[in-house]
Image (cartoon, rainbow, N blue to C red; front, side, top):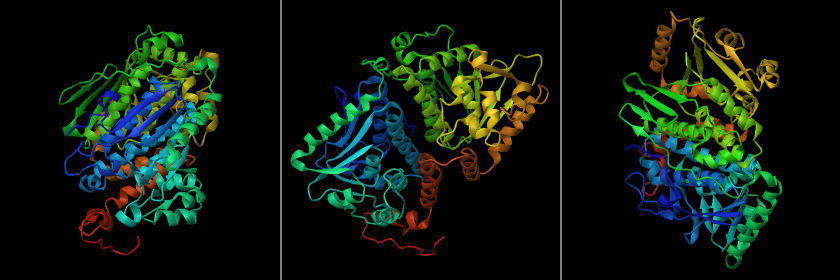
Length: 554
């Protein structure tokens, strides 16, 4: 089954998005029979990937289509239940590969909520009108504020360890102590208490912000949202907030068995050799430079369109092409056109739409960083690895740039490479690359005196440390072929672990803890007999049999 990651509000089955002035409401109403696969029902507002696809789409549309929104309420339309988290039977019947990709996508969706709050000033409010367990509480804890109905029954919980023998897989443990700053001993108790905690104790321990009685819950939440919206609007420059957004149209994709073509991005699959070519194409040379004209162009504007296509291509590679282990990244087009776009973006980053486009590009690049594929970049004649597209090269595990004096082959940095696209560790890709030589980063991105950009030919790029290898034209084809053959012959498990360990040098953040520690442990536990063996807790959930553990600690 091929999973399509595109959707829109008129296609939502599980969420309802409503806008009233500066407040948006995202209401969860999961249809239990509308599932991505057979063998389970989505009871109690539990979710599968199809439910989370809609949530991710809604968050994206709020940012681009409703920029006037300052507060977002996430709640449920089901009485006495907010969300029961990821569907256990779905997890129990899914392959390990799918479970990993499912959890990674849900993590990225919650990080997108926090990114919106952090950089665009919207406040997210979790209005728990009933019990929030597991992934339901993990969704709530990704929000800025959490309010629980005080009805004597509703609770918040992370029951994965005591009930399922796995971890809360969507950042719950990390956010509990790093974001909510719950005391470690209390977090330990909470994370092993299957029934969770109710109103007064949950508030006392910092698991929620407040409780409201059932009779006043909706009114109180509306008041909280209005106040949050006013606070969030205080930091928004009047000239940068246009009250008409742009519509995100469906991406046009033409697919065959061996190709997947968008307007600016293309994929070529070499499945028998376990690699794919990913090519990004430069923009046309007649793009507007005035932000109001860009807003009229809407989602057709190259950086937004191209990076939406890149995002969809990465998700397709992750979920629908599990045996593709290596992605060879290429670009085609005029390098000056890419640099011109960066100059426009840098000059107008205070405009709400330009800001959102840059933030979206950064999120897509982080998705590439977190994708469990090897990435090799090939810089050839006609390439345009400049500015925002140079980030593809910097995100790759290694890069090859043809050294041919008879060909004009350049890469280029722009002002945006100096901080517009931070990684999950908070550093730029140049900073992560040159941890031992921070002065080199300053030299490379010092472009003010050069019109906002700086180009490097092959020899200069190699001397600056921007590329890995520079084969000449006699060795190029053989060296590339051997590199591909070698990489695709290695253990995919070992490569995934190796790449995840090498890509994020430098400081640790909440995001890197979620992806590099919590997720890694969860993926290990997902394969252990105590969880998924014949007598494992996840396997036996909902059955009359009890889990039988191997009690050796390892």
